[in-house]
Image (cartoon, rainbow, N blue to C red; front, side, top):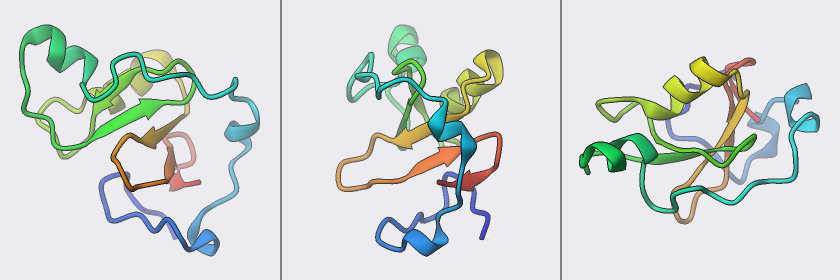
Length: 103
């Protein structure tokens, strides 16, 4: 099942998660660079993000695709970093931009 990162993502149903070779290529999970804030929105003085996502390659925190500026996806496009995870409290899922799947 392919989902977009902003659809409701199941966290307790591993059979809905896809295998992803990009997970094996990631460094140890980095700490979020700006916990609780989108880096680019914060720099611009904007606080209108909907949800936050953390890059699992470098710790960049960006706003989701439901947010006006979609900084998490822009980060992937500019860097090629493949996998992000939700930064929302109580959620535990990851999205691979390359495979376009919850992993």
